[in-house]
Length: 331
Ligand code: SF4
Image 1 (cartoon, rainbow, N blue to C red):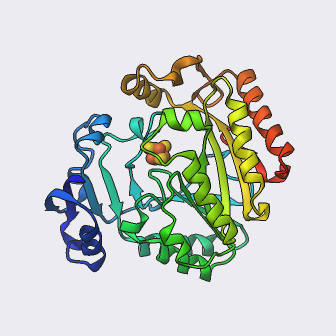
Image 2 (cartoon, rainbow, N blue to C red; image 1 turned 135 degrees about the horizontal axis):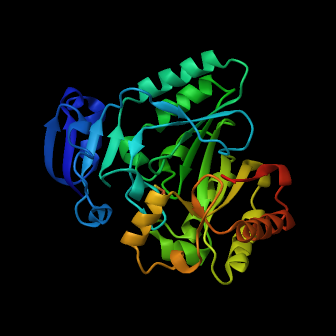
């Protein structure tokens, strides 16, 4: 249930917008000339998303696709992320969006054709490179996809461009749109996973690990290509045993469907860390000290990080996952 839905006047009558409006509940609706005349103009406390969440439906202008930061992705090829949404209905305590935007209000950008056009231009520009396009940098890629229904547009584009790759990253189990279309080798559905205790404690409003594993299993047996992100790992007593239980379950899946596995330890920019401390002052996230690291982000100290990452990586290897598919994220 959204409090107010704001729709850009130019697109209000379009079939795409009307189809979104028919699928959601809201108290008020308003039109406006441009979403960013209102969205983020005044600071709205992040936790107001619990009682008073607005939705903006808009066209994204300007640069729709950006190059990812270094140390992002598998290390192969050139990586970009594209922006088709801002913010999220879930509430992970470590989420960097809480310090990134001025508001938790959600934006759906609906000009997907402009995004795929820019993808096409990048393919022309880099004809000899393996290009990767990642969704989900500023939102969850799948949790509202039954409402926004953009998957088919991207699917058709990647079907026609088999040499570049799409990654949709999610914590949701909303795979309805995905399984309606047959798998493609260059579309990777990736899931963020954590220990069961961490997910229960920090991944507020997200599907449980059990449900995420069920969704992964369903896709794996239908031969969809998958990515797994064990990121962010938050240290707690018994964390390794809990991760091992997940690895054990995953090791029974057809492993050739798993394209890559990233592992990363919790980290924050200074701004996000202040927001986390402010929004969740009693959170167990703060149990271990954070120190400023090589890129000015706050992380556990390096020996601790390396110990965690090595333990996780070793136990993945022991369960039969291939070394060349595992990479360390943002290290
Ligand atoms: S699922 Fe991702 S985007 Fe959504 S709240 Fe959690 S970390 Fe943030």
